[in-house]
View (tube, rainbow, N blue to C red):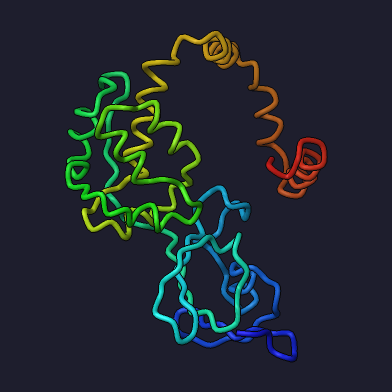
Length: 232
């Protein structure tokens, strides 16, 4: 659909119609419509996964998955946010578990239900090869699973649409934690950071920031952004 002559788009949020200015992201459009986002809003930079959104266009049946902070609203959009997916998340002690596919399957038995349909990959809003890293976990190729899943934002959309009720993001997280404990625990950098923490190297700085007002913290944050980049 084309932009309206008055520079606004018509969108539907939770089934209710709103007129919003053209050019806004979905997240800003939701806020413009009067919603106060206490959930479904986090980093606003496409990293935290809090703003997962499902939408379809007017007169179309296809569902689209996106991040509200990274996708512009469009005329005729029908949308709803899914800020939380109640997928299963196992509790385990990485210091007591072996880095094997059997370990992952013991805590996540649904791993064996994967049917290779690729719905997870097609659903991922940041286009990660989800099925590929799930397959790598099943095959015990944890190095590949780690590399393919390292940018996962844990939005949960893959789990929401998986017909086998897998939780790929949580399985991959377990793999990365097991690998981190088993393969990288004795690196010099890690040992140095542990020493720094034990010696209270950062205690004074943390105490200083904890004692600041919200306004003072905002000033410090803006200074960090200007010197270290917007990713801070």
